[in-house]
Amino acid sequence: MTLIPIEKRRRGIYILPNLFTTAALFAGFYAIVQAMNDRFEYAAVAIFVAMVLDGLDGRVARLTHTQSAFGAEYDSLSDMVSFGAAPALVMYEWALKDMGKLGWIAAFIYCAGAALRLARFNTNIDVVDKRYFQGLPSPAAAALVAGMVWVVIDNGLTGDDVSWLACFLTVFAGISMVSNVLFWSGKDINLRKSVPFIVLIALVLAFALVSSYPPGVLFALFLGYAFSGYLMYGWRWMNRRKRRAEANETPPES
Image (cartoon, rainbow, N blue to C red; front, side):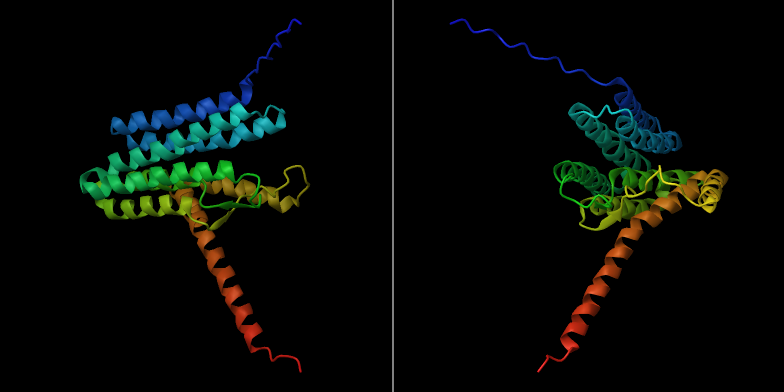
């Protein structure tokens, strides 16, 4: 009996979504290069560009029906460079380098937090509530770090002037990524659904606000987002405690 070999079908790679992922990876790599050349403002802006591109690749893949396992893995590796290694290195070179061991430990905590955050996201993607992220998303953490660098430089200060604050913010972002605190994902927003006209006006005003002073407004937005998860966590904790107290005070039925 002659066995006929079965030809394996070649798996193609979709160009369009992976093009956005590659562009995001390039922006992260560019941020690292600029940090090594002491051009920290360019590095911070490049991280924000990577964040925008990272938000587009998944949406483009879904709109064009070009999702693939390769694209998902490639996106995670790109995120690790753009939102893990790049922000940690930029912050270290800008403000933490002269702090000795504490400086590189803080940068490593951030980098490790980003790696753990991405690994947990990939393994829990099918079991978590789509409306919330478990832990601070790595792009938001990167924007928090890059936003601080950008706004401080824009105000004429150096990393040495705010080294302790930069150290705290870096550790805070790293720990927040691996925490169990829930952050709103925005995935429950339906872009195909009609909205009141006032929403369009609000979007125009939001763009105008960001364009008026990009470093400060973007940093404030992501700082508020980072604390919003902890505020919601505290609110839920207080409600649970209140319900327990009310249950204990309710007399048993005779």
